[in-house]
Image (cartoon, rainbow, N blue to C red; front, top):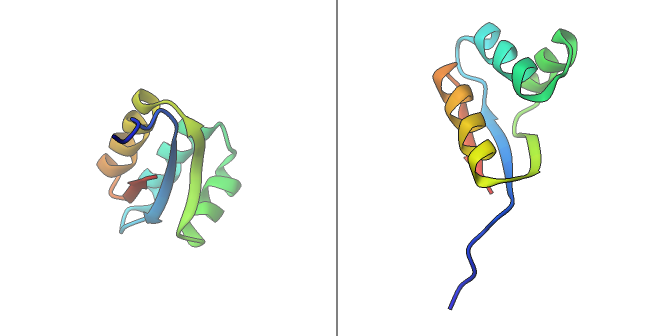
Length: 74
């Protein structure tokens, strides 16, 4: 019997075409400044959020996906 996962890591796999929208989403999700968010889009795959609950992980994934990014939850 497997245990349900209760902590997730949000990983940015690809920033997509609209990096400006992804940067905005990263800023909102992480509290990073513009330069740090922009740098994250250039070094993928990269961890966006670590050890977050399922709800926050799915909200982050949705926000980044809507901005055009490819995201994985681990």
